[in-house]
Image (cartoon, rainbow, N blue to C red; front, side, top):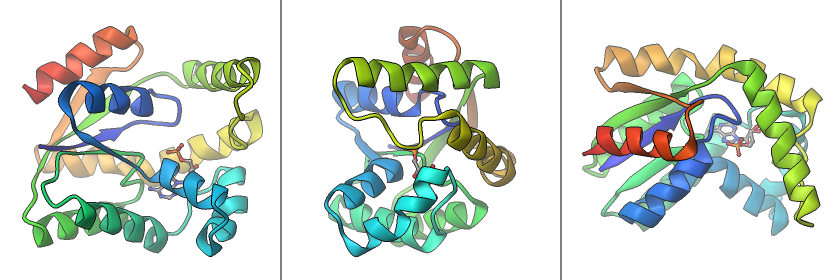
Length: 191
Ligand code: AMP
């Protein structure tokens, strides 16, 4: 089964994806994680996208579609949780083509619904907790980048809600509920 987790930055997509990996053996495909890994290893692509990511803007469709293709080809049996991808209509179309090409189907796109105020709070907390634990703080977890990330979400990603709704694939869960409750809601949809 393949699913998409949709929602603005800080909605809890990564957290939920990791729990699905643990409990259901699904494969998390986070383009954000892939891009951060490319930066850390200092690849040419990683260096190219660094400034764009830090500013909170979206990197090109071509780059992220390439990353997703690579991962899908490496895991022909599927079972993907797309986390942070697609983020534009062009990416959504490309994903559909990739799925067809690989004989995969999309079960649903799950929207994690949240309020903006909570997002800012969550992201500021994420940065604070990482710092307190001596872990690296994401360069884009600051208020300025967050504003841009939210604007990118509303301008470019939120149209995907209509896109998947029109395909009869959109499911919604309350992303403000407790982590365990959100997890149970997603579980109920998948079962
Ligand atoms: P995330 O970890 O999903 O919040 O992504 C962090 C950053 O990586 C985003 O703010 C973008 O700069 C970039 N990014 C991640 N996924 C995508 C995507 N599907 N399309 C474009 N840019 C992306």
